[in-house]
Length: 135
Picture 1 (spheres, rainbow, N blue to C red):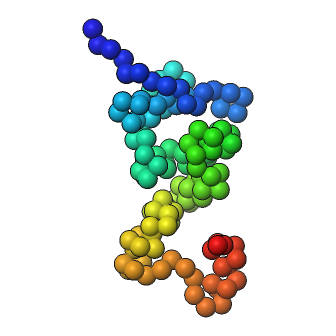
Picture 2: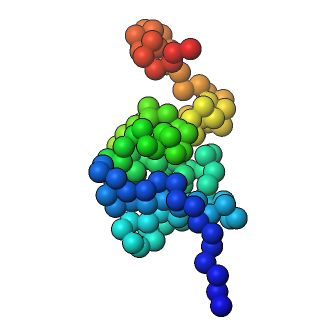
Picture 3: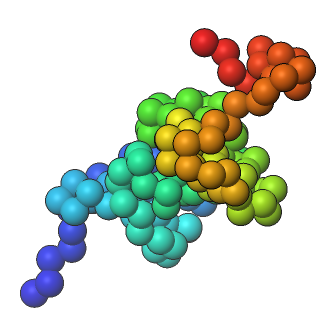
């Protein structure tokens, strides 16, 4: 007889999230995402994987409570908001840069050439620097 994989529930339903349930398969390092009672998708349980980041962006955009997502996945709500906004923007280059995160500067993601920085230069960099590039 086939044995079902041992799944541990990590995100359940509540008032703000009446339909999504997420289980972790510890043996295969995979997240099982259920919509209602149906399996919606399987995503690698790896914080660096783009599928993982897109899952969090979709859950954030769907209105799942940000605090619950922070507690379960250990990702800051501002990061999830940035991923969700990039996903909504329909700009593939922006999405690639945002998902690459800090690595975008090193690997040259998007239309920039390898080694070219994503930081702004000149007057625009000074105006926007405080908002986007805090240390």
